[in-house]
Length: 125
Image (cartoon, rainbow, N blue to C red):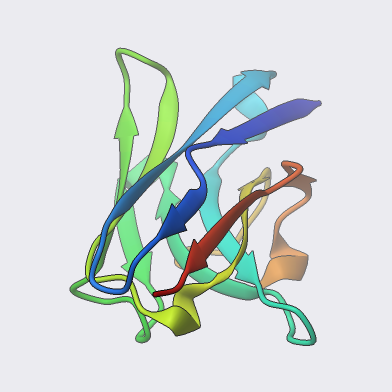
């Protein structure tokens, strides 16, 4: 089993920035990919950014390319999501996810089998 704990959400004005962190615990061998997803009220869960750990392959949704950066902090053992130039449409609950047998570069929710509880990000003036 893998447990995931998100932190770092909050409220920010448009154009601002936030950094989310995900702290995994449990069986590391059960993770071949990790990713961030988000879900706004009334919308489907959307993949934002991911890392295929074995090959250190990083991928982003088109909607966040150039504004979000996903990275692993090995010293803190966290998966971070740095978010810049935030827009109101980035408002959502953000979830950390881990997969044990995910295809490379997938941002499809059903490919991930471990999920955190989520952290809220609100972008509003």
